[in-house]
Amino acid sequence: MLSFFKEYKFFGIAFLILSIIIISIFYSILKPKKVLPIYQPSKVNFEMVDSTIQHVSKYHKIADFSLTNQNGKTITQADYKDKIYVADFFFTTCQTICPIMTDHMVQIQKEILNDNEVMLLSHSVTPQIDSVEQLKKYAIEKGVNDSKWNLVTGDKKHIYELARKSYLAVKTDGNGDEYDMIHTENFMLIDKKRQIRGYYDGTNPEDIERLLEDIKTLKEED
Image (cartoon, rainbow, N blue to C red; front, side, top):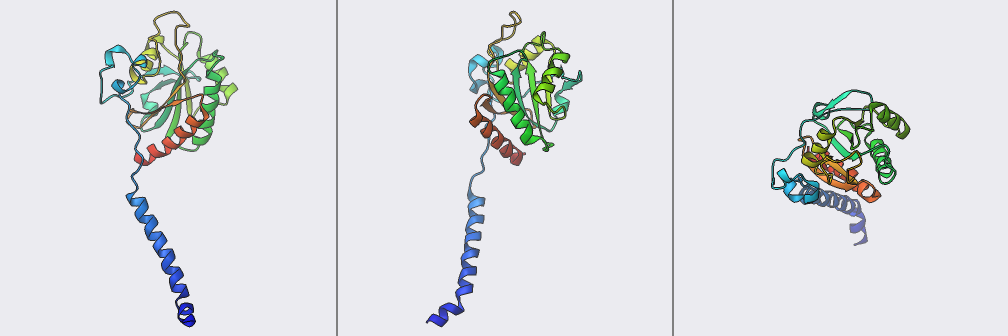
């Protein structure tokens, strides 16, 4: 009996390993893949959404845009064509949540630095203060990589329309004085079809980790 077990010992080990591999393959095939939601205006906090589109429940996409980055270059949707990107709204003189948000964007930049599919886009909500020169100074101070991350300024109405009607991320329409924004900490994850696929608290380290994981999920989907 002992000699029988010795004779088939290696066969048993090989069979066990093969069984584990087969079970793992079946598990990976049958395990449902994570799919990120597609956010529509009707499903987002109404305070963040312009009243004209609060009823929209499908086909929402980021609108065309034309803004100027920290190098004086015109940035449009063409610069983000076929890209996954993280967007936010900030201003360089903010002393509350913006420094934390920017530090977290720097962290994301580090993680995606060699990934040609992913970029970053930060919109100033005080474009009258955040000139090209001001954005460039800020970019240098924070370690912004120009090839991965655009800090943009431009027409205030255009920026707020993007915030309210595209990214669904800011509580006011920007029609008051230069400090009329009710700033939010939202980071938005945008897919290659210009759809919103995630909202994250840009001041929360756990949300940043979740965002990075969701970027991986989105890459697998695309």
